[in-house]
View 1: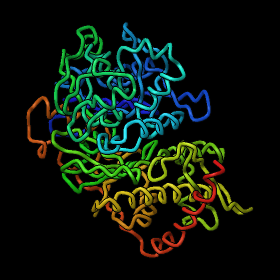
View 2: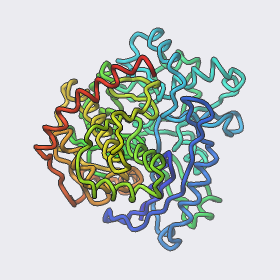
View 3: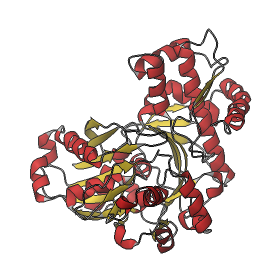
View 4: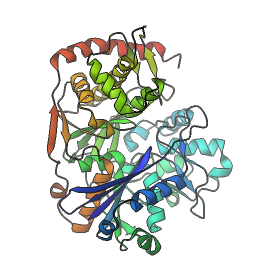
Amino acid sequence: MYLGIDIGTSGVKAVLMDEAGTVVEIATAALSVSRPHDLWSEQDPADWWAATNSAVSDLDLKKRHAVKAVGLSGQMHGATLLGNDDKALRPAILWNDGRSADQCAALERDVPDLGQITGNRAMPGFTAPKLQWVRENEPEIFAQIKTVLLPKDYVRLRMTGERASDMSDSAGTLWMDVGKRNWSDVMLEATALDRSHMPKLYEGNEITGQLRAELAEAWGMARVPVVAGGGDNAAGAVGVGVVRPGDAFLSLGTSGVLFLANGGYTPNPAGGVHSFCHALPGRWHQMSVILSAASCVDWAVRLCGLPDAGTLFAAIEARGAPASTEVFLPYLSGERTPHNDPSAKGVLFGLTHESDAAAIGQAVLEGVAFAFRDGMDALTDSGAHIDSITVIGGGAKSYYWGKILSSVLGRPLIYRDGGEVGPAYGAARLAQLADTGSAIETICAAPPILHVEEPDDRLGELYAERMPKFRSLYQNLKTSF
């Protein structure tokens, strides 16, 4: 048995997987996000630890006894600042926090080779600009920093006592030389830090430590190894077998990601495309990222006063028609690909007296799909070739949304067994790789296909006609944001 733990934004998920790769049990514990100021997004690291203990404790005790190794995945980019006692100096600044735009501009000015070194533009979501913001605005906090960890690696520290991270998650900090798979002294110096502030780097399938004795006893497990794991997207890719060059997935989680596995380092920061290390040795990947995806559905549920997302989807599907005049810009937390605009805002445009909850919901699903099309075009403009795409994340439960996405993207969408489990399952696979030493292709095979959503030609033509309006709305409004 293998345990995968994913430190997400909205909750912690713990997954037990048997030796055959079958998910046998899942437990979750909810998390909340604090937004004390405009553009801010924070969480208390202590809440991650409490939720992790809660989720693991909810798993069957007998199955926990059989766990051989633990893998970790988690939300990327979060700045967790620890002092000499390894306690958090302030709330962690999250991936969808937009306060550090000025610091991003300064980093790009001060380090002209930043894009080539890191594979990315400096964006407020990344970790390094957040530390610059702390340095300039909370100098008393910055002066106390001993260690900077990503969210899952803070949980690892609590589990093992080790300061460690994996290549894929650390590639999203802007402190790594992504091509060399090592910390960049140039980037660290640009934020007044050095390697002593950073965790030790491991490949995703390497062991980073063992469960502390007292925690192993509390969890009803042996002192099993804890494996490096991966950032949520790279771990999700491992879970659905997106490990070979050209493999791709679309993630419909809180944020939205179009992920493409690569065999080499191919940076293209100009189009807002991310280039990161994969969670597996000698492999890299590119991503386009939209900051609000399934979270837009949750927003629409609250806006329309509905009890839950299922009720909204039922109304949308009963309506069963494209939006008529309504258009939605899904920039509720700003946007990354392709705009790199933390100040972008969500817009619901074209409302009439007939615009009910179902029509608004339809526009929200279409708006997220249009944003994914922008992201896909940014990838393909860099020379990437994408044939078919596997769907993962909570939004993968809706084939109706899949039809919209497939028609907008002009690509088949593949739904696989366990796709909704996501990164926690990939973390469990990485734990199995470390424990058994098996071949990557053996453990990381693509799960069975449950459903293929083919593009609808009629819808595709309609949505192609509407894309220019979607894009022009942002261009016309961006100076007002």
